[in-house]
Every structure is written in structure tokens, then in C-alpha cells.
Length: 522
Image (tube, rainbow, N blue to C red; front, top):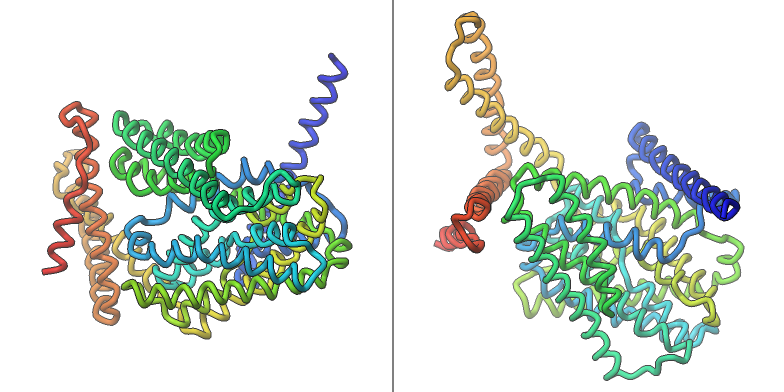
């Protein structure tokens, strides 16, 4: 027993040391990228891949990348954080193109890539289908971060992020349905595949709604920030594991929970301070997980094996680009005809070029059973395509955005938002001065002097705000949105307070949005 215990302790120590090395390298890359201005031009996640490639080139392996590790430990928090931050109102406005890209687009991608590879390479159709399913999941983490940094339109950001959220789930379901074919345990049938698909997705959405709304109403009963923060973490992992155990799609379930808690639960069951704490917590978790995943993607590359499959990788890259082009331009045209969402040609081009592949594709490829003939071909092909999309498409997306004049006025909006925040803060300080009784221990002249200083600064801030509003009238929408959010927060906090006090039995649907919507229509 002592020898077994000793061996276990050594293994734990080695795993811990490897984890600390990975974390240290990731944080070093983050620090360097902020210190040197040249590195700021490269998205942080892509810089991690490049560093990982450098380590792989000199044959320094940080840790063995397990598909279970990504799917069960890394994937849930990444999905939950993205779903938590996506705004339901904006997603609802663009839901038709998002669903088209995420469902029909995945089908086009799987079929197109599979047929191309099976016709132009030595890969059999079952193996090619697995490659297609693995590469149909987009992972535009760095692109969405770039959109926000450069101030791209909200519509473009929500289309890219919404598609990625849902097509990950559809791609994983497609992969699970297809992986049994080369093993001989499954026979492809359109009817059976459709039934299985709806079963996976249905169980995922059902459990996601059950857990999401359950936690939302639970957090109405108490106001404990750390407990509520912990519940979101448990919901991300617990939902994924429970759904997978019951035969549903854990990815779809986690996305559903994240959207519900981020847009409904956080409004009715959390006060503004708790919402901020939870959002910052998940921002850290996403940074932490992305740092490890993207570094390990580069670190796991086997250059010798990739070199033996360059022809397959080249065909796969062309197939990925062409199928994405067909799905984006074709489905966007269909959406423009039948919906009010107008996706311009330049926006379609960015959506096409920005469809990067990443951690989900790698995890699916690595999860192919060892007994499958052609497993290494699948892994090499997927790794090669992922590298191309991250390093070529990812690094050139900023240039494409600028060439198509889709770079927004983010720096100006950031300055304006900061001025609005300072105005609110200084206004509260003035209110405090006005309600504060002049203490005999405080010199009255000093008291007036301090108050005049704050008043002068507030006047200066208000003048800058007026100047920016005059020069850039579009900035007024920011102040209007802040007012709407504040009014909605007041209403939601009031209902939550009444429920906690036992004066209200059930939550009421927000009335402010309907009132403001009617006002805008008039």
C-alpha cells in the first residue's frame, strides 16, 4: 500500500508541476503581449498557439492533451462564459441567421468536406465524415475579441458568437452520430440520424431550461454573492455531466443554462453588485482556460506526422473555405430575403473569413477511438486545418476588417462611457456633500473648498460629454441604453426584494421593456 501511495503521490506531484509550468508559460505570454507594443497587434490566443508551436518544434512537451480533459473540464466553462455574456435581446433579433448558420451551415460543412476528401484523397467516406464533423465546429474566440477591441458592429459580433455557440453543439452531436459508422456499430440512416439528432438536442435544451430556471428562482430567495457565484460554476459542469449521462448534448445544455442565467437569472435573482462579481469571475475563468487550451493546441502538434499528410490537409483547407463560403453567402442571402436582418456583403465576407477552428475541433479529433483505422489521418488533417485558420485567417482578420471599413469607433465610445461613469460617480459625491451635516470638527472653509473642487470637476466632465454629443450624435445611444438598463435593474431588483421578503410569491415579467418599446414606436 505504501508503494502504491508513493506512486500516486509522485504522479500527482508530476501533474501539478506540469500544470504550473503550463500556467507560468501562459501568464508569461500574456505579460509579454501587454508590455511590447508590437505583440499587441496579435490576438492573445493566437500568440499562445505560436508559442506552443515553438515548444513543439524543439520537442518540449508540456503535458499530454486528453480529449476528456477538454470536453469535460475545459469546454463547459468556455461555453458558459460565452453564453452568460451574450444578450438575449440581440440574439433574438438575429436568431434566424444564427440558426441557419449553426444548423444548415454545419450540414453543408460536414457533407461538403466529407465528399471532397473521399473523392480527392485516399480517405474513406466514413473517415471523411468524421473529419467533416470535427471541422464544422467554429471557434472564433480571438476573432470575437478582435471585434470588440476594434469596435465592430454588435450585429456582426452577435452573428459570429451566436453561430459559434450553437454550431459547437450541432457539430458535437453530428460527430457522435457518425463515429459509430467506421466501427461498424452504427449504420447510417437519414431517418435514424434525424431522430437521434432531435433526441440529443431535445434532452440538452430540456435539462438546460430545467436547471437554468431552477437556479434562477433559487437565487431569488437569498442574497449571498459567493454562493450565487459558486452556483453558476456548479451549473456549468453539473449540467454538462448530467446531460451527457442521460444521453443528451452537454454542449447544448450548457449553452442553454448560460443564456438563461445570464439574461434571466442574473436579473431577477442577483443584485447589480453580485452580477458584476459573477461576470468578473467568469471573465477570469475564460481567460484562464483559454490560456491553457490554446497553448496546448500548439504544443501537441507533431510536425513529422503533419508532413506526411500535407496533400490531405491542403484538400481539407480548400474544402473548409469553399463550404464555409457557400453556407455563409448562400444562407445570408436567404436570411436577407425572408427576415429584417440585413447582412451586408462586407459582413458576409468577414463571417466567412473569420470562421476559425480551434479547441472543439481538436478535442473531437482526439476523441476518435484508437480502434478506428485512419485515426491518425483524422488527427493530422484536423490539426493542419486548425493551424491554418488560426495563423493565416486569424492573423489577417484585422486587415480584412479595416479593408472593408468595418472597424468601429470603439475608442471614442470607450471614452464617452468613461465620462458618463465619472459623471454618475461625481454626482453621487455631490449628493453626499449636500446631505452631510457640517461637523464642528471639520473646518467649514475646508468643507466648502472640497465641495467646490468636486463640483468644478463635475462641470468639466459634463462639458466634455456635451462636446462629444455635439460632434458625434451617435454616442447618445449609449446614454439611452444605460438608462434602459438602469430602469430594468431597478424593476428586477424590486421584484427580487419583494420575493425575498415574502411579499410576492412569483416573479413578474419585466414591464419596463414593454413600456419603453411602446414609447419608441410612438
